[in-house]
Length: 395
Image (tube, rainbow, N blue to C red; front, side, top):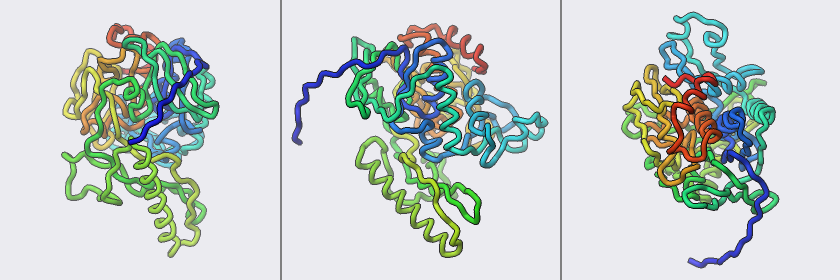
């Protein structure tokens, strides 16, 4: 393989207390939490829209905040963002019982505390909320390297339309979804062994009605597959961390979308696509190896360092406390993760990657980053008291 050797001098253009890398749901939550805790926050987003898979990826289902048995388990920013997503009306599945004083019976046996929302409305409302809290957003900006000082990140190197610049930081929250900052900083990471199946979700209009076409879906962990498990659109699986592979995946997705549209037009001439995903619809790629790795068999386990709770979106019943130790590792003192990058087993990953869990872990990570730049030394009781004060229930 041929190489070129670069000798680069990168100017430091910005400084902040907390740098949040990635503007998906976990990044939005982390930036909000850090700003509300008094930190100067910069949020990086490589696209020009906030929300990640939940907006640009068109995965527009805000999955449950409740356990499916009538008990809400996720609070704080997790609930705040659900309410924000449907502030101007839900696209579907409005959780009436939960938002309009429904009975315990309705909450227990009816629809869970979830909603379908419009991605464009949600993205803009989230942007307005972040700006109102003083968060500085850098769109079109991707992290590409870090500058280390001992066991801490000193600066994050980014690239955007201005070129290559550095941002000096006190602490960093990795909400890239792919543990990119962890990788740059040589923190220990792990890949999703099962890899991802193809999805081609898109919006279309038929007979004047806007609809979401959920073509392909997220995969089921191998150990839970049955004969009724939905078959993938293609046999190829995608790891999700290599440029050409992602490019190929998106093109295959586009082929499925256009073929699906043309097939529907055979019987419905009004069938017209209106929005396609602008990022790869890929769920699980690379994660941090934290001080603790949570498994899906540990529902109802009590953790002294819990920073919030999530439910299992796939079935009613299980509730999980999230240990703070799943958010950071042993290698980099001032680096913390949230959302899809936290330390969980492959089976738990399918539960912890979704919107409520991303918001719960994002809020905890952002608050922790505002409180400290050495997470192994942070007094967990101080973080827990802060989260409880902000409306989070940790147990």
